[in-house]
Every structure is written in C-alpha cells, then in structure tokens.
Length: 211
Length: 211
Image 1 (spheres, rainbow over the protein chains, first blue to last red):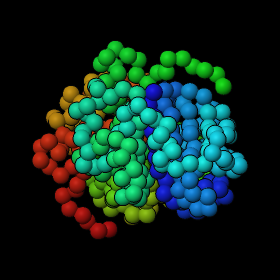
Image 2 (cartoon, helix red, strand yellow):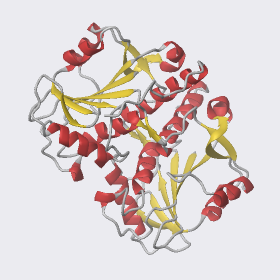
Image 3 (cartoon, rainbow over the protein chains, first blue to last red):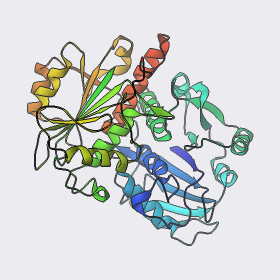
C-alpha cells in the first residue's frame, strides 16, 4: 500500500465553491485535484494500492480529512473538475470525528495532522522537502510507505515540528523544486521501478474488492 | 532547449467549446491542458527552456499547431482552465500556414505532423512508447531533445510510420503505461538530474527575453 497525504492550507472546507474557480474561491483546490489525479491514475485504470488523504485547513470549517481509496474508488476521471466534484460532494456531508462515506471510495471526517498521522503507526513516514535524501537512492528499501506533501505554501514550521516528532524521514525527488502533483508522479515511478526490479507487478493491488 | 510535441487526435480546432467541459465537447482537451502545465511549470516559475507543440487533429478544422514558448509565455497558471483558455484564444485566431501570435508566448498555425517534424531537423527525436528503451539509461547522453507523445488514443499506425521515417528513437519512462502529462514530468526529472550531474543549472534558460 502507498498512502499519500497532502496538506491544503487554504482549501475550502464547506463545499461552498464553484467548480469553475477551483484556484480562487475554492482556496487553491486545483492543487489538491491534480494531486488526487496524479496519485491514482494509470494510463488504463487506477492504482488500486493507493490511498490519498487530503487535509483541508481553509475556512469555514478548518480541519477536514478526505480519503480517496484507490481500491474502492468510482466516478473519478483524470480532469480537475472531476476530482473537484468528488471533493465538493464530500465536503457537503455533515462531517464528524467518525468517517462518513460520501461516494464509493471517498470518505470524510473532521481531524488534524496529528490525528491523521496516528493512523499510520508503524509505517515509514516520508516527508518531501527540497533538501531531503534522494528517493532514488533508497527506493528499493521502501515498503508500505506514507508520503506527506505540502501545497503551494509548503508545510508550516508547526506542522514540520509535528512531522519530525512523528519520526518522518525527509526525502526529495530531484534537483528542482516542483509542484506537489509532479512530486507524486516521480514518487510512484521510483517505487514502480523498484517493484518491477523485485519481480512484483508494480502498482497492482493484491485483489480488487467491489464496493 | 527541450521541445515536447503532443498529438491530440480529437481535440477541437475552432475554439468553439466551453472551459467547463474540456474532456467532452472540447475533445479531451483536458489531456493537452495537463501536458502544457506539466511541461512548463516549476514550483516557483516556469521552465524557460521548454517549448510545447500541440498538434490538434479534431473537428472542425483538423491540422492546427499551437506552440507554447516557455521563454516568452505569460498569463498561464497551472490549472487546466488556464491553459484551456489560452488554447481557446489561439484557436479563435484566423490561422494560416504562417505562425500567428495569439497571446505572449503562444503561437498558432495550420499544419500536420510532417510539417511539424521538419522544424526539428538535426535534433534528436524521442518518441515515447511503453516498449521503448529506458530513458534513465540514456538521459546523460540526451542534448537538445524533441519528445513526441500521443494522447489517450496513443499514436496511429500512420503517424508512427511518419515518426520512424523521421528517425525517432523509441524510449519509455518506466514499467507502467502512464498518462502523457505524467510521462512529461518523468522526462523532465531525468534530464534535470542529468544536467545537475553535469554541473549545469537544470531547467534554466541561458537568458530571459522579455516579450
């Protein structure tokens, strides 16, 4: 399994926005939409072994967590409006501390970074920062990882302190600073290659469970 | 310089579409929009050493070529609607065999694959196909490349014959079949890394010319 966390510091948390203005009134939701797409799509199908967690921290209800489960996901197309629409539907649910299913494979709850990180106990946490260790040097050793990425604002000092306390390893994907969705594509490629070298079928889940 | 060609077999060629339906009425224009964004954006700025060429083959005027020049480009944001809007503006121009500037850094003309390929004489042409040679093995040798990618329909037999006649080398970016925009991100990363290893500043143009 590969889990990918993206922190959206300005992302709207009520669903009260138009799909025609994802970068503006939705609080740079376009960034999160592209991350969902990059995390989940293969050319012909979906990465069933991937979960995406969006931590939305914008107004009016900061602290919502949306989970996209590749194994169960339906109704997602690669374009930004498509993921934007599933995000909007999830945000319109009456969220509590407990997971609520919005559409097949999409769940929403209230929560913060610490509560999200606590879900991944025992798994390697890999935090992307430009000065991190090159993922290419360590991809063959990575198993069952959780990646954490910021948005256009990066990661705040406070969040970084939480991440370090949780025991993250800091990694990078190359010599240039890139958009989060591009980083996700590069992460997948490194892991796909490592799995292929081990003779595993890269990107494939063990089984497909119909929702 | 890195030039990237994407063939859009169904992409609208009149500009008569709504930005709210890039995948549908615009003929999978969403794919081309994501390619433009992946080809040109860095985290903080634009890749000034990249040109993107969209070969649009959909109705009603099949055979238009749009060129995005990273060095001169303005008014482009990373979201799909933003590149869709610049594409639409260019398509609304009265195109001829001669380049017409639509907005800063965006040019449009009539043309086909052969006429586009003839622009790149003397440069290495690299065509992406799943069974190609791994780019990672040859990235350090690549200079001044032109990459050619298909869309969701891939590349037709006839186009492939034209490409082979033009002397393309067939390359791949990893063990899985990926969307064209993801392939572009991976190509850039391999070249960025190769340039960094050579001590060059990756992704930087020699100079910035103001339009």
